[in-house]
Length: 261
Image (cartoon, rainbow, N blue to C red; front, top):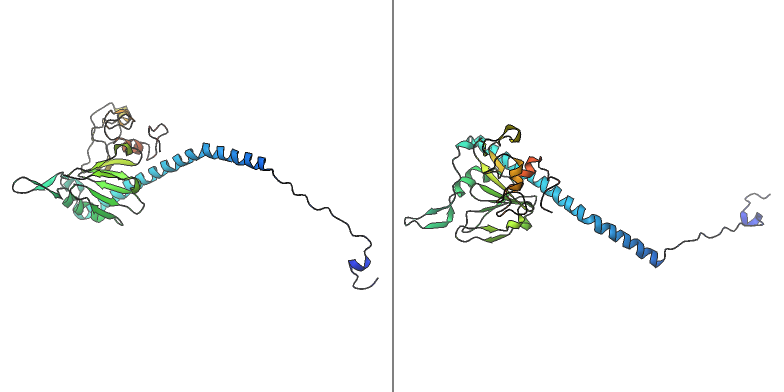
């Protein structure tokens, strides 16, 4: 045998291997598959979107509550306990004739002394002719400060001010409980609700920024069912108690929450 033997020189037969066959899908099969994927997506996508929006609300509410109360604690270091800060006044300064000056809201000095300097990385906008201040946060949320009330919008793009003349600033009540949530600034370490059976009573809140609970009797039933501001579809005013209801569940939206996201 020669050295350097090659297949071309010594082979008498070369095996022939069959070419691999490529099975192709028909157009009908592709369309059926796409149709099934579309049906599954249509069934699951709304749930995924709902869950994402709910998670966003839960996360941002808890964060806003924490950030605001951290700011208040920082303010207390310089300004003393919050209970000694004096009341947040509503209304406007008046001239000698008793005419209101809508460019001078009475809450401005209080907010600019005790609250705004201790909120980092925010943009503050005073609304002309109204006792309202827009505070924009880096995460895309917005808080509308009034006197002692605060309306928090999870997404600033959902915020719409419908009017701001003569001290009035209107907003869409439909948004409450889904896009907008009501808080208030509480100065004293006291309970806001009346005496009720011990097994129905929830603990009193501390001072600082708290979910709106004015008039609350301490029961979950009232947070849900109050005809005027309860967290329900038939509330005649804004569903202000929704914030407190979510806090009651550890800043988690309960499974039977009445509003869809």
